[in-house]
Length: 421
Image 1: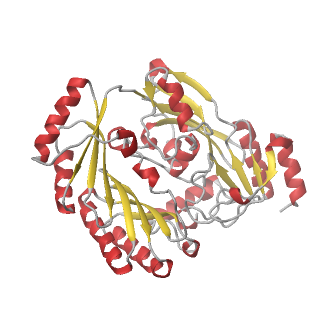
Image 2: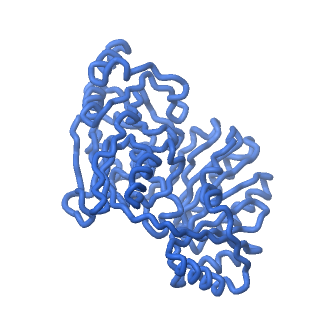
Image 3: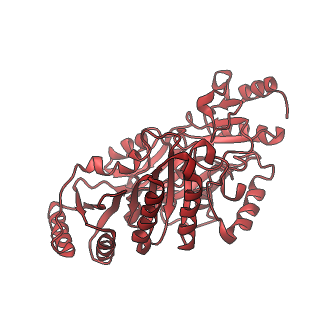
């Protein structure tokens, strides 16, 4: 690889001298400190930076708002952080067609603010919307409680532009909701953690805002009762937009349900829910506070904290909570979880570091035996050498083949993704 001075000069020629700087400790990627940070202004500059990096063998870590730079495995190399922060325009909002084209560096909050002026929204409730960007949310496949009704981001994206390592700007999809022509590049890029290309812009289908919402909460005495009510609600004709369960060690589980409808519709939904729950008391909490429960799992984390994302069959939620209670009993660990009715959840474990590692692996084995998964998002330093992703199954050879096809020099986030991709 060429020396550091020529690298900085070449990057400055592409993005401007003021938009290249030496990396600092805050720019670390899973604990690995890069050499430089470059901030291109548009997708042409992003493509040019990638082409230069590919030619010279410089490894690149794409970054949006920097909210999830600890997710995944530590990269094998990370010379350059490529920030999309300056490429943040809303390119086109066709409100009559319920679509929007937006650059990857636009924050979720900024996007929603513009859409709200026309009574519309991207039906997505990702983590840290004030800082998280469109590209970062897509690359990490983030999703919240609204996934139950509206799907994940991969279900809302209808077009994408991807800057490939050789400098190509690849386009797929279109600007209309029913467009199905061509290879489905948007879904391939979603959740790939920036290992296949850098998302430069995306086209989303939108949904109308609903001014009338209501959140109702109920508590059950044990997990078997909660599991029974979960099935009853999901099998009913209730038209709820979100359903989450909040759980913590040695505490009774609580469930939150969000309805969006007319005032009469909200009243009818509430009455129907009361009948399903058969005597279990309902209350109306502070809805803004309740739906931030996932974000609060990340507050005040330290070297005795593990945060993981898990998935399992909704019918196994009660069983999974019993696994957690066994860990609490044997390690004196405390845990908290926010679980969506889809079976996707976030888990926080706090325990003494000396007994942690084997129990995390044992917990992952339980999830994988139940056809689920456990991905480590935040982990203490001593767990950094452990794989964040777990078993990739028989999809790994195909994933590696796609990676080699799009990034043959292996410059994009090498080693951060599943199977060391």
